[in-house]
Image (cartoon, rainbow, N blue to C red; front, side, top):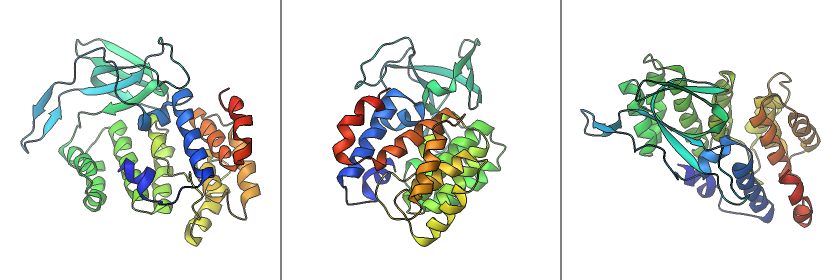
Length: 287
């Protein structure tokens, strides 16, 4: 799925697109766990891998929730991803600011959500486990039918958000960014953790939106009290005749109270930097 989002959907790559993608990669290693989820491999682990049990369907399922987070005490070079560690236990809450976990020994632990780069859940309902497996197997048409049932299966809120994030990625990957954007804004209303902003269907290429998407993006841009909607709108209108309004919005969103949106707005602004100015501005992007 992720490969199709990054390389399969758009066969052309111009220099501006390449620069935008490079800038996104830089932002991932420097600023936000929202991007790191796409880029970081699992590295060091403070505990063993999650114990697994075999479900009645024959698939192995995790016996614990696994949380991978950035090790804040470690130092790393700009071009080197930070070290990570893994925690095992039962997630009780995973909100925009913090994740609450009960370790396997029964002790309670709280970590900052912005440090979390990956979660492997022990799905609380069979419907949710089935929907996630369809996503993992690339059975996207079936997934579209399975997610609504999973969301109605008394699933805990933090797992609902993860499933919606997978649904957004699926719809965007099927070439429907307008629909994906609408679903993401529903997710954003629930104040998800930074990690899930990785599924936000922004435009990172010179792709031209069709008329339906342009009309919807204009509506998103006009939502003055919704920073996520404004970012989506500005992203898709940045290379249209509404460029000036989009650029102004991105400048304003760099001061958003939502740190992830602020960082995304900065990165989106890099798309308008001409190639000759890239090296001149590079030092500022690292600040």
